[in-house]
Amino acid sequence: MLIITTYVLLLILLFVVTDFIKHRFLLDSNNSRKIVHIASCVTVCTFPYTLSNSEIYLICFIFVIITSFTKYRNIFKSIHSVDRTTFGAEAYPIGVLFATYCFLPLDKTAFIYGMLVGGFSDSIASIIGKYYKYKEIIVFGQKKSLGGSLSFFMTTVIISYLFIFILGIELSIISILIIAFILTMAELVQTFGIDNVTIPILSGLTLNYFKHVA
Image 1: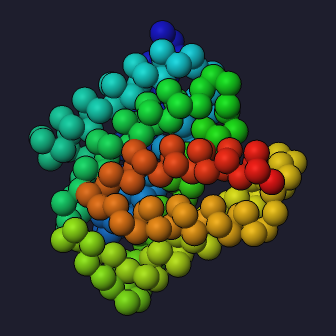
Image 2 (image 1 turned 90 degrees about the horizontal axis):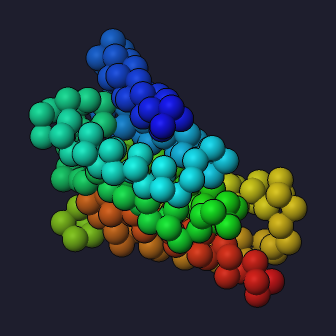
Image 3 (image 1 turned 90 degrees about the vertical axis):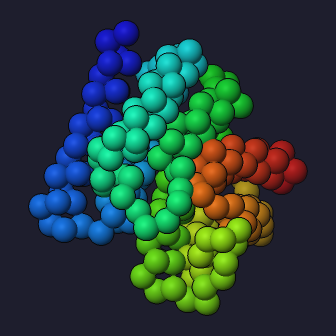
């Protein structure tokens, strides 16, 4: 129970500190949100080595409640005050929960890969897409941009290459490009933050598929 409490307090502290930074330095909500997203993703990558599945499920359940309550009460503007309709903050712990169910405890590699793509690629795409707005399109009533999608693709290629290099996984560059393309298309057509649920799972599944057919 101590380790669960530690993780919960650590993540709440992350929200509080990012809220302070946002107000102190007038940080854009999109940027503060992505700081939390990336930091949370890195933290979650340690879960398989310190927590059982049931403990991860409990943490995810706690944060579904916390993010839903703080959004309703207009607390933690660093993650909730964005200029579009999104359920990304509430969806993220659900994505972690489903990824845990799909991959842990046996397949830590797929779980961590999914978290990294969901955290870094999505965040870079959001930031680039918002500020450069190259060839914007409307998907289910929300704005997306081809510039953001290209950023997602390139970030996923880099993450994939470094990931397989560090872990010694045999995967061709063609496979990496196909994986990045599939995940980019999946991210492009999803709105309202639902990709926080699907991208980590799809990333892990796609990596495993190409590992076995390589």
